[in-house]
Image (cartoon, rainbow, N blue to C red):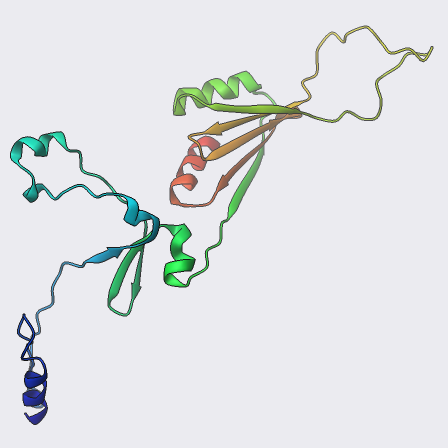
Amino acid sequence: MRLKSRLISLNAEKKHPVKIFSPANCEELKIPFRTDKVAKVVGKLANVAPSLPMRDLDMQEAGKQEPQLITGVLVQNDFKLSLMAPEDLREYAGLTTTTITCRQRLTLSAAGVDLIRWALEGTFGALKEITPKREPTNGNAETNGNGAEKDEEADEEIDRETHTFEVMGCVKLHIRPGGQIEVEWEGNMMNDGIADAVLA
């Protein structure tokens, strides 16, 4: 009880009264806790102006303003919550981050570049095509017996280019000669889902 009295006197000047419990031994006590949590937005996310809560807007303006979604990493230190962008974790939370690049290889010898592009555009919409790179050929140009280069073209032209498509700005698809395909993406929850759909 002396401890309770001392704590009450130390917190007497606070705006909200402090509740101090002193139960007897084996006495059951129910302590209410606030269910809502408040997080402080720091770093780059603090530059994004949040939309006003619906209760602060007129009913006419409420229909005009779209609710704004702010995404980030929620970090708890002791009892303080902070919301920040992943790239700010080192500066504001003292944590280091690692980026994982995922790659999956498969062979589609029966499907050409045009068919793959058509299938992806049907699922994901427009694709971004990255300038293809020329695959190096084996050695020098092919020559005939007289040492001159062959002018004849083969009946079927061999595609030696690597075609690269970017799906939804996060998953790259490298299509190499012979139907060799490599899907590459930065590992995170959203990109993993898109990569699964591309692979399917």
